[in-house]
Length: 149
Image 1 (cartoon, rainbow, N blue to C red):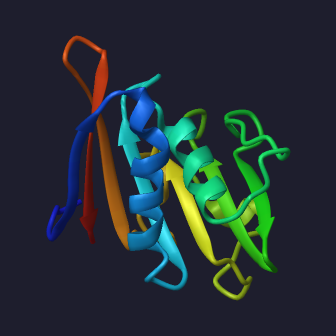
Image 2 (image 1 turned 135 degrees about the vertical axis):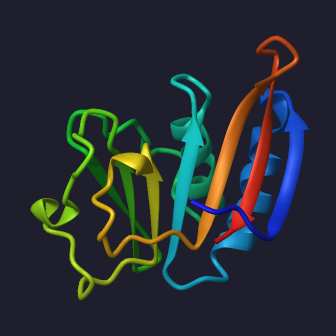
């Protein structure tokens, strides 16, 4: 994946996650639908950031956002729009998301894809945005770098 068009580059601790998620949400929703690839080591905070982005888009706090590691996908309804959160960690390197019932014809406002390198290279889920989450300052904070693809 070629990186181009850096849109955001922030280093922050966990106390700033709500603000960071809000800033990212404002950028990615401009693409309809958006496809956000989330890259980072295990435990870097991909699911946590997805949770706060969904909350900033209007998902009620009462609805939990958990990792779909075992189910591969969770769907969330926000103001009559559907968002898909995928975690492909357990998938093989040629995962075909059509097995999950997703297709180009189904209406989604956005996709969050953790471990996108596990997708079949012919997948229709080509990224509109790529986010890298890296540890910084001995794991006390994170570096968030968002690119437009």
